[in-house]
Figure 1 (cartoon, one colour):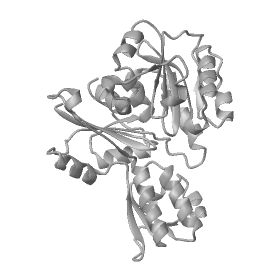
Figure 2 (figure 1 turned 30 degrees about the vertical axis):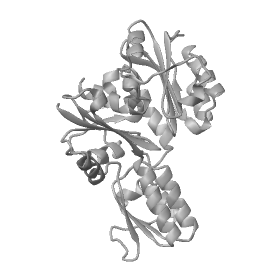
Figure 3 (figure 1 turned 60 degrees about the vertical axis):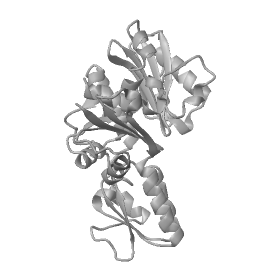
Figure 4 (figure 1 turned 135 degrees about the vertical axis):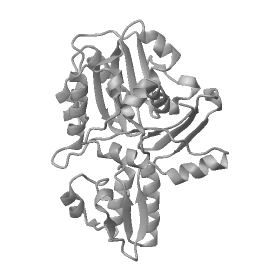
Length: 337
C-alpha cells in the first residue's frame, strides 16, 4: 500500500488523511471539512431561502443535519422530491418518509433544485487534491456510523443489537474491520459503491483503533485494561479494552451528556453495574458491562467534544499530535492489519 485515502465521516466533520507510506505522517495531506450531511443541509437551506423545490438523488448517507433541513424545507410549504435510495437517508420506512410530505420519484421535476446525496464526493476530493498536485488514490478506507436497515423498529435499538453480536463473538478488535459488509449496513454498502473496494469501519470502531495508536495508550494497553471514551459531535462511545478485545461498552448521544453523567456512566461501567436498560431508558443506544469489575490503568478521552471531560483526570489522546484524525489513524491501522 503506497497511498490510501482515509475518510472518517462524522455528524459535523469529515476528517481526511491522504496516507502515503513514502512520507512521514506529518507531511501527508490532512483535511478537516464539513461532513457531507452538513454540506447537503446547506444546499437544501439555500433552496429554502430561494423558495424552490428540491430533488434529492444519489445514495443513502448520514442524516442528522440534512434530515432536519428537509423537515424545515417542508415546514415552509416547499416541496421535497427524492429517489427511493436517497429517501432512505431520511428514514428506512418509505411510509414514514411519505408521511413527512416527501414525494418519492425517480424522475427529477424540472422546477426542482437537484441535490446529490452521498457520503463520498470523489469529484470534490479530486479537485482539492489536484490543487495540491496529487491524484485521487485507488485505495480508500472509510468510516461511517451505520445504524443498520431497520424499517420496523428503532434504529438505535437495532444498532445496539449489532454491538451485542460483536461482543458475543468475542469483542475482537480485528472484527471491527469489515471485508464483507453485512446486508443490513446499507450506508456502508453505498459508501463502497462510491469507493469500490474500500475498507469499511464504523466510526466508533475507527476512533477506538485510532486511540490505541497513541504511544501512551499503546503502552498502557500492554499493562492492563484501558478505558476509551470518544465524545463525537453526535454520539458518545466508551469501551473497555483488554488483550486486543472489547470487554465492555456503552453508547449514547453526546447532546444528552454532561461531565457528571459521563463520569457516572464510566464508574458504573467499570464496576460492571451499568445496565443496558438504564442507558436505553435515558434514550441512549445501550450498554454491555464487563463480566466483573475492572480497574483501568488509563482512562483515555478523544473526540471533537472532548472538552466535556476537561475537568476530570483523563488522558487526552492525540496520535501524531492530531486528535481530529483519530478515526483516520484507526483506518490506516486497520488497513495494515
